[in-house]
Image 1 (spheres, rainbow, N blue to C red):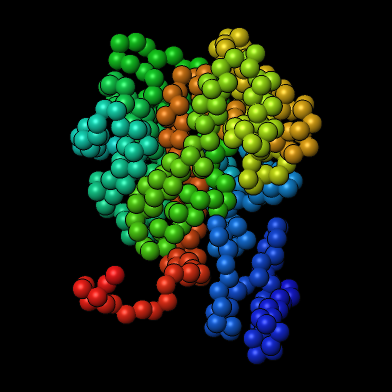
Image 2 (cartoon, rainbow, N blue to C red):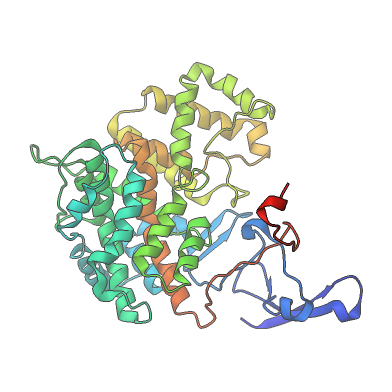
Length: 434
């Protein structure tokens, strides 16, 4: 990236308090002002709550143009990847930078498939949780605990160790996610089946029971695979930034991914699709949709339509169109077009796509709206939605972590602050304090 020009910052109009900073251009997207020397040149920091105008790193992995509704993984449009690739091909792309050819795909698929089992003593780890523990609480602990079982490859400065850790995390996340679900409902754990695809294997581990033969439904497996692809990475969001920040200290990859899972657990981040289903339950019936639409338009009502609009995409979420197609395919396959909740969701979707209030404000249904409906239709309970989001996003987190570790400009994260507390004061003796 070449420095194309400079930006001048003038503090108080005094030439002594002005400084110039290089402006750096990316391959696409906004330019950035390189302010790394700001403190030494001016004695000032920038103030940017939420880092909404701050580029924290250079990255070649994911690009988003929220105004145009564009999402690229390594330059490839998400629409093309979701239509033409399976999840493990996308994993290869995110980790290595290129889509695999047939030989590379066979090798990568084989490696991941043969890492899906977890250490048998991890069973005992699970049993330390209460039966009613939230699955995300289990996931945070179980993933962080992997470093205690696979400590033979924790040298983050060794590229081979990093690659082995990546394989293990991608491969074992479906197993751990399914185990968290089985534990929460009191069913026995199901071992992986190496004859199945990544998504089919996960679905079997979630829903198979020892007493019955598990039948693979290709429509549902493809739907699950698409959910994983669409959620695999999303640039420097809160959880990805958390993974990078944890990794900047040299923490092991399992600890970093556990940190990402903890961040994703927040309702403002990974809990959005669960919130959509909760909203549909609150509305309750198609006859009440009009009333709730009016409430959503009334800023004083306090009611907000969940699953509509996006803080990044100011146009249509490119993932939503793909998830909408999958949603209708799944409902048709399962004969759920007339289910109460799904009829309600479709009625809400129709109004939001046609009502001027929503159209002019670009409050279109987003990927969370549809993915929650699809997962519910497949029998996945609401409290597992964020776990599956974590499963999908693990490959993105790993790719971002690997990129950060190999970046020569990488430093330990250390945001600054605007201090507004008390100025220096002296400690009084206890008896002198009022």
